[in-house]
Length: 364
Image: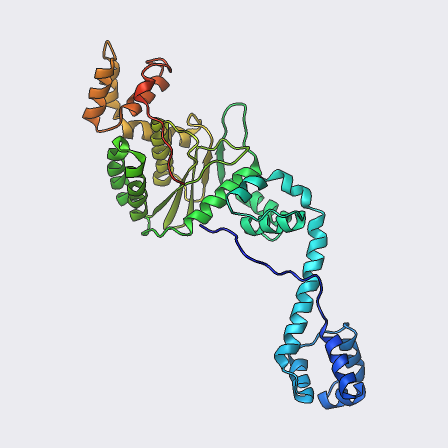
């Protein structure tokens, strides 16, 4: 986790080395012409340094050290601090014109989670947001997003489209979380095999399966992170590649129903197994359309409940609790997965056997 908690000292002034140089000359009674001669520079150039019109270069700093006995490091540091201060002042003026940009982001929530520092000064808040996003300016963010957009395959829920800025913030949090997760190099065969082991964890409680599922993923080169959704989003999951040998699988924990959680996980796993490493799959619905989404849906459905077995189940004349529990037991999966599938396919009503569906909360 990469969060910002720093004590910062930001002085509102900086002393140009020329001021110190002039004071030194006056204190020692040295004329500008004499010092210029000692340093082998023109009197005009020395005056420009004193007046702040010319910088103290590294060479000049060494010459001043020889002539005055004041360390070159001091002159260099004074020059560096002065130039940096000037650049910061210029940046502040520019950022002041962009503070309304903050209104597009979930600033309060990011502050609450410890990712940015919220200040009474909008410019300082904006700086913290930019640092969180890993960009230098609002313009840089826009350019980065525009370059990334062709790679994003985004599936939205009906009548709702998540905020671009909130999506970017959520993806950034996931990326920061992933920085602290070490994985083995990605191996599709190991990942496919480990998915079988993960499937058997669907009967376990969250405190049991959560560390295990993350371990199975990391052993195959997949970093799994759980990050709660942000305001103005309804994201359920996403996948992307951080490197050619490290995939990132992200779940938002939006859906608390056990069956939807597992379906979403295996849906995202399919994107990693079968689809382009250059694409970022971002989804806020479990019923997304499109060839790749349908392929991921079919993989998740059939992986959790094999098609032939499911077909036999649906031919049962009466789908009682006992029938469903016995079928789930024979499959080695949680009954909620069976109920959720039957509800989704319209075989039973959405209000039927919900007592067999568990709700849970995962640590994130």
